Image (cartoon, rainbow, N blue to C red; front, side, top):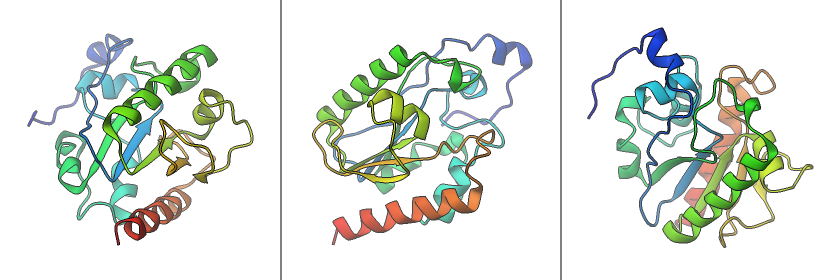
Length: 188
């Protein structure tokens, strides 16, 4: 495991365009899909690593993990049947820097990963990115009727980014709990 560290300002600024390796394996319960890495995340090479990102605490509060994992413990998710990928691989300072073409290409890349790795559920963490990537401008958080990569258990959830003021932590956790209930029900 890589030791936790806080990147310097220089490392963060130099991370533009870098990627973070997928955390994925065949047959996962849930494949979580972020929009793209932020600069802090790319600088440390771990998903949802920026302090203030709500992914790790929300995942725990929703019942997916027995404790709040650090981004530097992300490999532990695989033991529980969860993985993480990004829709667009390249890091930017903000997700709104991505073009509709990049998001559409990221949607196609996500579909291919889902076809290859066959997770039971795919949860896209970014409502606006989902709407653009999959051409569903009306999409609301929760389960989706359309398939992603051939699987019918597609979900869209708000971005856990700390700058996403549209969804507070309580609402993010509530939506993740709904997903967790659906996952648990599917494994009965």
